[in-house]
Amino acid sequence: MKTTTAMVAAMAALTLSTAPATAVTDSVCAALGGTFGADQICQTHTDDQGYVLDFRFPVDYPDQRALTDVLTQQRDDFIDWIKDMPAVGLPPELDIIGKDYRSGSPESATQSLVLTIGNQAGVHPVTTYKSLNYDLARHVPITFQTLFKPGTQPREVLDPIVEREVHKHGEPGALTLHDLGPEAYQSFAITDDSVIFFFNQDGLLSHVDGPLRVTVPRTELAALLA
Image 1 (tube, helix red, strand yellow):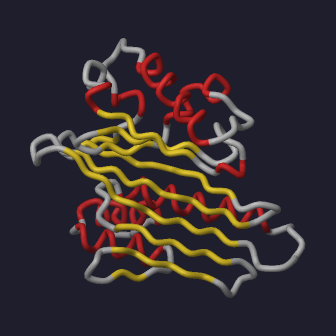
Image 2 (tube, one colour):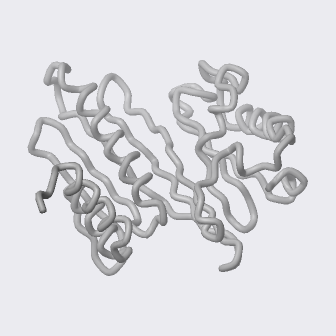
């Protein structure tokens, strides 16, 4: 029987989806040119193409495809952005560091991975965030929308908390929570005690005051959380 290109692709996809977790994580790390050891942390480093890429992240995040998509998109966007930049001083650099957060019991656990993205290309280095959150019991991603009960208005609680933190940490930046809308809260991590929100540099605070991290106790959100 003749094997078509489409059949080969389908068989490859099936193999990946049913492969043991270690094989999937190994392929993800290898696809990014990285290595990982007993600590289950993938490390990648590139410095021979006129730019520097330095990634470090746990390989045990349950939605490996989502993680791969985010990391490759960040890498490709960075390379595409800098390709026409004149070579001045140090080479452009993209650093991505992933930190793991967990909550709950085995029956109702969540896992979060927050990527801190350092872009050192251009006039000033900029730090931004991207998070991934997963419901281990239901085997589905968690978004800001699904984190809360349907019909609730979490921003009515969150906005005043974040605005107080903005005033504590420095000068207001170029953007407000109103400007950002729901996108303001897309990067977060879930722990047993709190939900931590991460806000990009050059957003709510001035550039010199850096990015912002706001920890909201779960007790203040208990009536809203799904």
